Structures are given as structure tokens and as C-alpha cells.
Length: 117
Image (cartoon, rainbow, N blue to C red; front, side, top):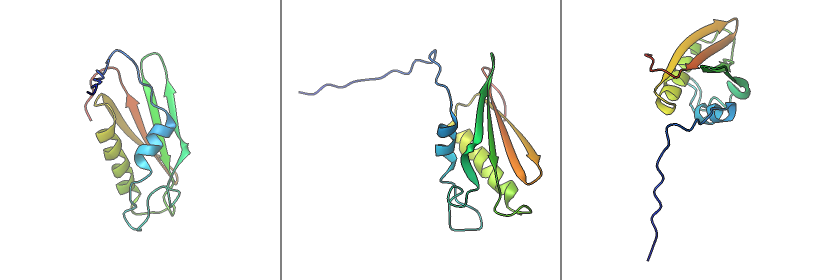
């Protein structure tokens, strides 16, 4: 005799996103030029991921440091992070990309409403 336990997902319960969860999703992305992951090359670090929440939205900032300031693959790395998070997180996420000096910043807005990418 055995028991089967079925868990139903309650959509009304909020499951907050934290920096560690985001880091765990993107750490194993392979660098486009090197046989290492973004974590192994220190391109992504948990300390550079911020999660902020206000009354309506949760904002996730993923900052990454290319291996060299003029890295030609920075855009591709940003796209790989964006795609990984888009495939892994709730579909109601709006994405915005910003860049600042040698930092590449991907800003994700987790919205309560349905958004388009």
C-alpha cells in the first residue's frame, strides 16, 4: 500500500523572488568565448543582483561584469541571461535593458499584470 500526495499550486500565495534564486538560474550559463560558466569567470555574482519591491511591482536588477571592459560578447551574455530568466520565471515579467560604463545591467520588472516582452 502506498500514499500519493498531490500538491496543488495556490496562485493566490505570493512566492517572492530573491537574489539567490536569480543567481542559481543564471550561474551555469556558459560564456560564449570560453569553456567556463559565467560564475566561474566572475561575470555574474550574487552580490550584484538586487531585488526590490514596492506596492505594485518587484524589480530584479542583474548586473554583470564582462571579462574585459570592451567585451564584444557583452550583448550576447545579456541576451543569454534575459532568455534564461524569461524561460524560468513567471510569464508576467517585463524586461528592460540598461547599460552603464563597463557594467551591463539587465533590469527586469516583475509585474502583477500580463506584460509583453
